[in-house]
Length: 341
Image 1 (tube, helix red, strand yellow):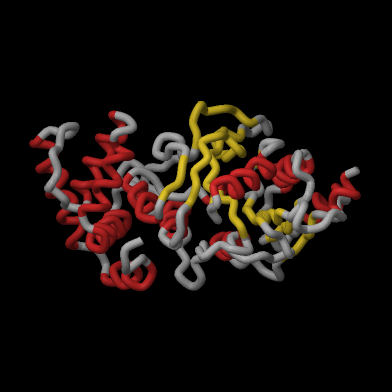
Image 2: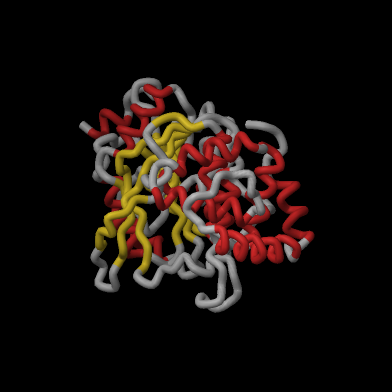
């Protein structure tokens, strides 16, 4: 039955192509591939981009013996961001109508591809951002629930304009690229970073979010599992300082420069969009106030942060802003949006 379905006309059963970047994780890659094979929508093709010179993924793909899975090793390690860029190309690689990326340490729920296609058709958008369950991968291979999701704290079910997506960066990285699903034939957005490449995943997702130039739909239902290792720490990401001394990536000077630039481009409208997200919870309200102080914005009725602490934070962030590098400012001007979205 499956073979007959795969041979059906493309317009009736369009192919979804799944791009899978991998590097030295054959066990979790096998789990990800098996989650594909268990999809209730079987009309997919997968391409595995192996970034390891040891080609650990080769035997994993061969043992599955599934002609829907294509193995494509790189002659040399091209770096994680470049491998992600290959996987996040907007247009089709394998002739598929739809596309998504499935990283080797994540995996899908059985109905995800079918539900994603149905959602894009129903909502008449080209980009879907699907919520993901966050789990710990233990040393023994078990996947432990955390009770958290990747974007449930900041997004509600529905359509988001590019500006609303940018406003979410007061709280998070914007997109979670593992939850992206798109129409490869009609999409206008380019998620790839090209030569403007950063190593830290926080900033990769921020800059990919800023590539979005069209509405997206957020589906709050859990579509996949996003796994993290036990010792994962957000403190100090993007910093060369020890974790105890480093500023979290959410508040450091690179994020400060990005948000200040967005404020310069979009003005008070950006703050208004961020206030909508802030009103989802007390935690979000406090985060927004921290970020407004981070970007030296004081035209706001602060409630969560007391005046003495506000003064101290403003002084700290002012010093940081004055020491931002010219290279960063140049990169922002060349890479971030320059007109209203």
